[in-house]
Length: 90
Image 1 (cartoon, one colour):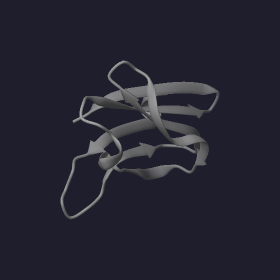
Image 2 (tube, rainbow, N blue to C red):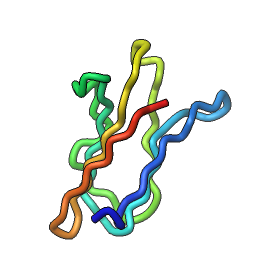
Image 3 (cartoon, rainbow, N blue to C red):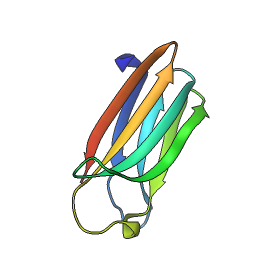
Image 4 (cartoon, rainbow, N blue to C red):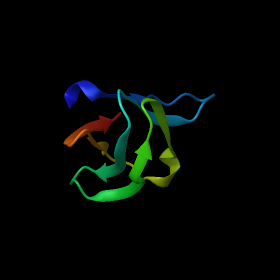
């Protein structure tokens, strides 16, 4: 399943909103969450959404979060397999 998704954070740009970009190589069920540094869910951006293959961009509103370290977590289910990717938001 690791060959079916790649993700990257789109860094803040004063002219464009910030977001999480990921690419699916096949249709999948996707959940995207923002976590605080203790692993607690701060916000669920997508919850078991059906997504087609291709590039996906999920906007993030940084103003919603207090100062501190945050992570994003993408969970993907496709082809009978599951994959979770968790990375720090910088």
